[in-house]
Image (cartoon, rainbow, N blue to C red; front, side, top):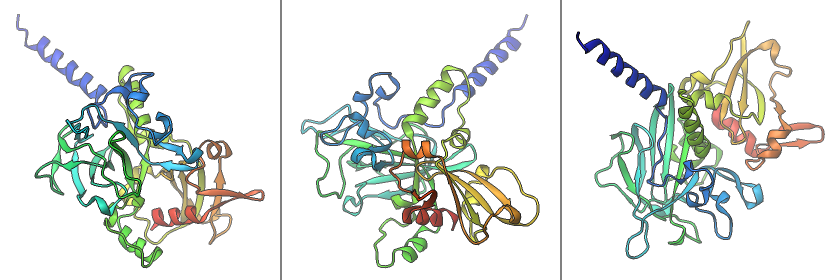
Length: 337
């Protein structure tokens, strides 16, 4: 009796299982302690005089009032001078979008941005404070998950710098806010420098890498496929804003899968739901009659979400009414242009 059918069935099962356990992102350095419960101190590099939590994502700086849009990953290996030598690898298959090799031009120091296609979305990873960029690395190159792109370091242009002891990789997972960021920035902040074009950190809106890695692990343990799109849509909503139909809402073309529902009648605008870091997690088209006040923005805030994560300062309560701050208005303008 031929064993071919049985062998083909086995191969099919292996492929199916591999697909189920596939992850959107892999860890960008050899440090794996983030996935070991209770070992967080071995993974995150804290700020001076603080605990490991200050190296995580979110409202973890300045007593909860300063946003940290990535995670700071500890090094495992050092050379004879105590400098880090951990390799930094691509967290997912993707294209090198930007390389900054002039550390004096950015708080990120030497940094790399990669573009990935995940769940039908353009997602960007950022690798910062690099000691050196991998030889021959160029913008436009395709790199597979796990391919080395740099060496961990401590480059930055901040006044205090990064000490040898605190050398780390700053890692981010982002959405791109605006394809025309240089023009937007020049119009919004005339006279201010922008040395990095659309790869300026202000144009990258961060998701929580730690939470994503843990969510992937849980999905794999349950033999479920992790969906980054679903993860984004299920983010806690800080605020919902009804806005008049923008002339150039290019974000809709870049992230059409975030658009939910449909409308009847004339399209007048959109209800944009933002998570605490300003990531647009849902965009709902609305008809003219659904706008309570044409020409103005209505802001609906979840007070519990705001209380848990207020540090982006996108909204504040004025009397009994929630309104956008100047930062909130600038952010809304950025993502709807």
